[in-house]
Structure formats: C-alpha cells, structure tokens
Image (tube, rainbow, N blue to C red):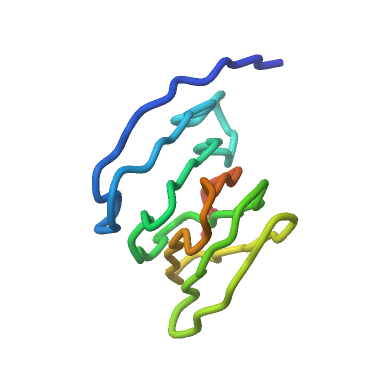
Length: 116
C-alpha cells in the first residue's frame, strides 16, 4: 500500500501554455516496481491560464474535471468541458487545456505507461 501527501508547485507557461498553473504531485514517478502508474496530480489552472498542447509518447493520460470550465484541445478538435467530464489521451496523441471560466479550473490527472 502507498499513502502519499501532495507537494504543490507553481509552473509558468507549462508545456508552452499561458500563465501560471499549480500542480500538487501525489505520485511523480513509478510508485513501485512493475507498476504502469507514472503520475497522479491535482492540477489548478487559474482563469485565462492553460496547459499547452503536448503529445504523449509511451504514456496515456486521464483527466477528471473537478470544477471549472475549459476549452479542451484533442488533436485537431476543440470542445468545451466542465465539472464531471473525463478525458482520455491515448499513447501517441496530444492534448491541451485552457481555463475559459471565471473560477479556477481543477482537474485530477493520472498518467500511465503504455507497454508495447
């Protein structure tokens, strides 16, 4: 069993995005041998800030939107997402997210390694 407390850090222009975002890392590398799990984090994106578009190579990422309103970029598509939405970014594809609301966007992110 692993029990972790998070470590909150500020990031400016994260992955080429806009503004400062805050990430609380609960897992920031493989938690135990043989685990496909790589990262677990709470991501806070203030109004107008974003996580820049990036491609996942060898990993997949799941977002669960806890609160807020965002423009989610999935490849060449843009959709508006809100609280309760889940997104899945498979290996070899890209995504980005921008807070288009008036409140801080909060999302839970999980990144797993993809075995080939």
